[in-house]
Image (tube, rainbow, N blue to C red; front, side, top):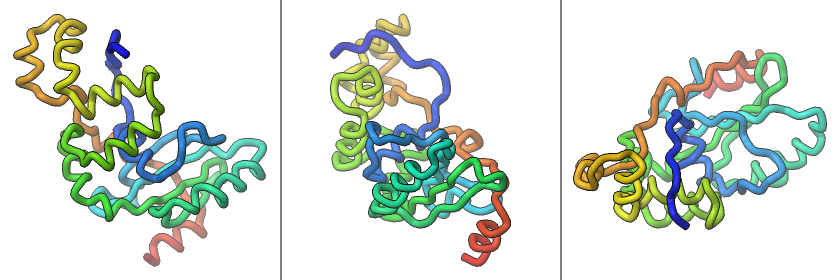
Length: 191
């Protein structure tokens, strides 16, 4: 598959590069509306958490079946709780086992992620899809330098000088700001 266009807007890097490490699948019945690495006032980037937000659908019974049968089975699942108006379920995953990988992630060095992590990410997206080719180019940029040079109208040398083909995570945009219900606030503050 050939890269024919670039994605020019900011996207949540934690959703693209870290959510696949949960073991959940893109083909699951429910996908997060937001992922981040910080929950304003509760978790900071140094806590090494992946904060995932799901909008609770009207068929919440089906969602909670998914939560219990799939989300809680993740080897890195930690806890979950509702936001203040009970329209969002916040799920916390512990990324401490990926501490070394997170250094590369925070520095925007996605090509330096381990082979195991890259494989998990690529398996999440499935092969030969539009999303797959873009993510593949971020993880293995040297194979796509020429494509990017053509699409951007610059020299291959300029692309090689930059090295990475995806921008660094914007930590402000990777922070989730939600009001939590009182029960969740008390429970999380006690940790």
